[in-house]
Amino acid sequence: MKKICLFPGTFDPVTLGHVDIINRALPLFDKIFVGIGINAAKNPMFSAAQRMDWFKAIYKNDPRVESICYEGLTIDFCETIGARFILRGIRFVSDFEYEKSIADANRTMNRNIETIFLTGEPKYTSVASTIVRDILKNGGNAAPFLPNEVIATLQQHLL
Image (cartoon, rainbow, N blue to C red; front, side):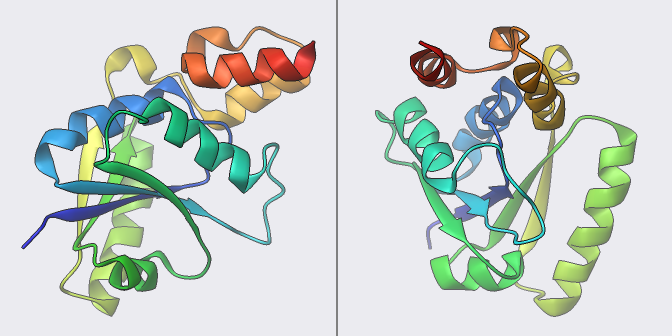
């Protein structure tokens, strides 16, 4: 049986922290779906298509990583794609407390899907999409927090 994992999030935009978690999870799974959650309550800075394209560009040479959009409960989407694992990145203790409560609820709804937590590399703990969006909205240089594929797209739009 293949070990299929879902890494859910908004990824608005994709950061080096996201890529770090995926790269370190690759030895653990046969396939990682990067699930870009569509949430009507959120107003993203970048389209879902753009966020999917970034992951496609970053992992163009690795078929084990595939980006996909979804709506609804993450636990239900796991069943749709055959994922038995949910991957979550943890930067701080407060992240763990929040993520654990979600993992506990997911486990109550489906005991066959396990949540796996990976702690972020210390050099990426300050990297959060919210901070990066704020930097971008205010004309700052967010390049130190972003993969080259994201930087290239942003530079094209700024020209």
